[in-house]
Length: 327
Image (cartoon, rainbow, N blue to C red; front, side, top):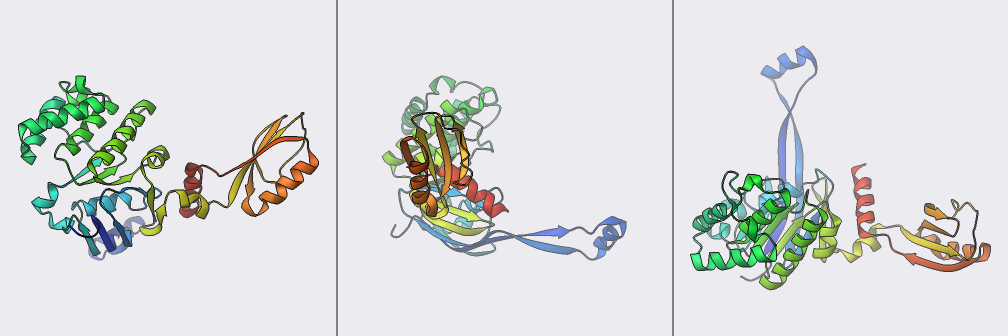
């Protein structure tokens, strides 16, 4: 296939909702004449993703991330625009496309609740027509990598959340998809399980070249796995570029750490926002345009033994950005 693996042009999804009028009179009028409002979950979004890319898909709650993944998976028909995944229009739901992609939603169950994990995977083998020898080799490899081989014969309902998510991931990858959509794959997992799933996804992407689109509220997932991020807000494309550019573009501040050779009793509020202060140090959030001036003032006024200027973390910048766009 030539061109991008995923190509989206002006994709739009609008939902029409009934606007209920207040009071009994409004309810009676609604029986004969209803008013509707339109909400655009996705509004004219365009982007392309090349084969093998691992892209983070970010936005505040309600931004349209899950709706976009459902359209690209063919689960939801758009109101307008076009999308091409692996050369197919997703909502045509062609079998040839279904066999080449997988959608994993951290808050939805894809496995059969009352069956052992092994039997659930076996059902997936039959559905996708996977040759048994290949199936057994893939299950063996993935359960070893995810450290869950001993859970194959446990009922899915009896697995912990972390163990279940590992089995869900194995089920999604059984048929060796070329495109993988991940919607909050580490939600609710403990730190150890999150780390193991991230390491596995990174290794799998590198080894298989699967094109992956990931949504996550955990910036650890994004920072560790994605070089590129697409950010949407209120259904519209807000940013598309390298993760490293997010800090430069959206952070108006830097973090300044001053360490003193003796105790200093002073107020620093005129220099910036005090993030942390002890008698021997202070950490400030300082406007980028003021960093040089604040450094000079500090060196002139106090016994500074060490000075460090750093960028805020990506997580902090994204959190501030989402707080801004939501308000």
